Length: 518
Image (cartoon, rainbow, N blue to C red; front, side):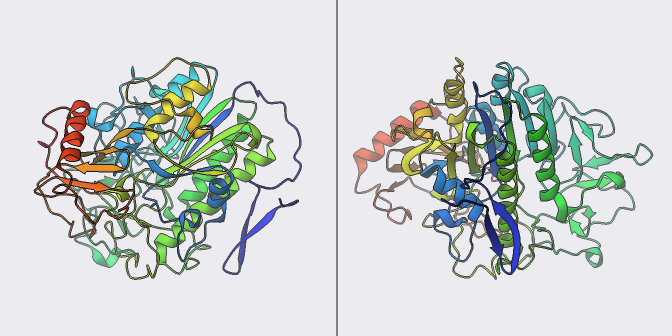
C-alpha cells in the first residue's frame, strides 16, 4: 500500500490525489460509529465497458478503479431499467418500476412519481437517526402538476425522505436549466420569473430549430427547443436568467455541495445519494478536461466524473469517515453515444467499447441496457473481490434495512447484504429487466425476451432495442454477446422461462408498445 497520496495524471495535468487506498494518517474525529454512513454514487448513462476496472480500452478511470479494486466488483450487477427515471425510481423505492405506470422518462415539468406515503431508502434511514441528502440529478418529478417555479416546489425530494436536496429537476438537456435548493430555485430573481412549457414556445424566445446561428452545440435529434448557453434543449423556458446554470461547471457545483454537506454532517450517521450527471448529454466537461480523453466530450466527461469521485473520496478520508462509510457505485442504465447532439462520441470512439462484451445499450432489453458497473466498497469491512452474483439496485433497500437492523421490505427488493459485503456469492435467482415499458426475464444464466412490436434498431441512437416478432432465448454463460437465439433448440427451457415470467410480471405485459427515447 502507498504511504502517501497517489497522484493522478490526466495527460500532462495533475488533477487530483487518490486517498481511497492511502494509509495517510488523518485526524481522529468524534463520530457515531454505531451506524455506518451510506453513500450511493450514481452516474448517468455509464456503460459496463466505460471504466478501466471493467476492461475499458483507451480510457483510464483511476478513482473509480480504486473503489472497484478495493471492494466488490460485480460482473452481473443491474440497474432496474435501461432508462433513467425508472431506474431512479427503483433504486430509491425498492419497487420494480414497471409496477408504476408513471415511472417512465419524464419531462422537466412532470409531477412527483414517488408517493409521499411510500417507503424509500432515505425515509427508512431518516426514521432511524440518519441525516439524508440528495445532491445531483433527480428526474423523478416535482409537485403535483402545473408547477410554479417561482415559489416553493413541493412535493419533491424533501417529502420522500431527504432532509436536504440540491438538484437539477430532470436532465441537463431539459428545461428548466436551474438548480433547486430544498424546493426553491437557487439564485432566482423575483423580478425575472421563470416560465416553463413542454407544449409551446414563449413569444420572442429563440429555439434550436429556428435559430441555428445562436448554437454552440448542434442538435441531431429531439433537442431543438429553447437555447440556454448556446445549447438547444428539450422543452421551452423563459426568464430566470440569474438562476440558470453554467453547463461547464455543473460537476464542480454538485461536488462542492456534496463535500460541504458531508463535512457538516460528519458526526453522522448520514445517507447521501450523490447523483452525477456524467456522461449524459449534453456533454459539457470543464475546460480543464476538454481533449484529455481523446474520445471527445463523452470521454472527457467520464474523466471529469472520475476526478470528482476522487475528490469526494478525499473528503471522506480527510474527515476520518472512510472506515465507517459503505459506498455503492453504479450507473442508472447502459451507454448511448449519439443521444441527441453532434459531439463526436461516435467518430472519436476508436477501439473503446462502452458496452464491453454486451449487446444493446440504453433503451435496450439486451444485457447492455441494464447490466452496468456495480461496486460496493467499505474500507476495512469489505475485502477486495470480484463477484459473479446477479444483483440489482432494487435490492439496496432490503439490504440496507438489514444493515441498520430495520424490518422493511417491498416484496421486490431482496436482502442481499451478505452478497454486497462479500460474505456470500449467492445472488438473485431471477430478475425482471425493463426498457421503455417492455420487460424480459433473467433467470440464472438464461434470459428470455418476449416478442415486441417496433424497430429492431433505433435509427437515431443506432442501438439494438431487443424487439422481435418472436421469443428470444439466450444462455449468457456461453453467449454473453447474445448472438445465438436458442428458442428452437431449447423449447422446454423457453416454456419454463415464459411461465416464470408471467408469474412475476402478470398477463398483458406486451400491450404497451410506445417507444420513448431521450
